[in-house]
Image 1 (cartoon, rainbow, N blue to C red):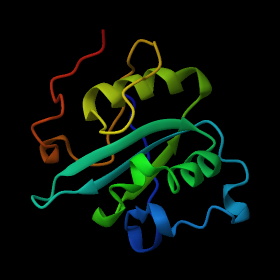
Image 2 (cartoon, rainbow, N blue to C red):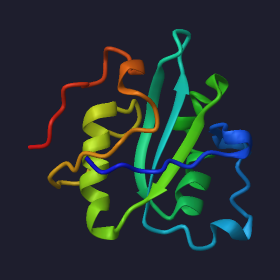
Image 3 (cartoon, one colour):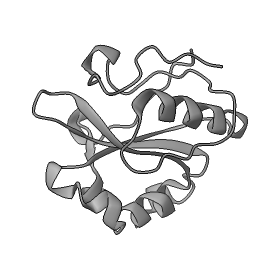
Length: 136
């Protein structure tokens, strides 16, 4: 398993999708990243809305106006991302999609899943996710 460092905001808190200022120059070169959009359900479990990859600024700005994703905005959508070498992105996204089963978007790269660490502990995952998923 590849251990990843998942981004957090100020005070080591998760970033709200609608409050990240993607116009800031800090995000100018954020290409080759993988991201997760989720919210915490009433039981304190993470519910994944979207897993994706690409230019963080472009992808997350687009998701801020995507009606499928914004349908969950009232639940305080959170986002995190991490960088990976380009040759690992497809496999990591395939793995995260298989494990987290996002509610929006079910097509993932046709790649051998590469196990990566999650931003939250596996024991917090709701029962609808595949906690036993293994690489092919």
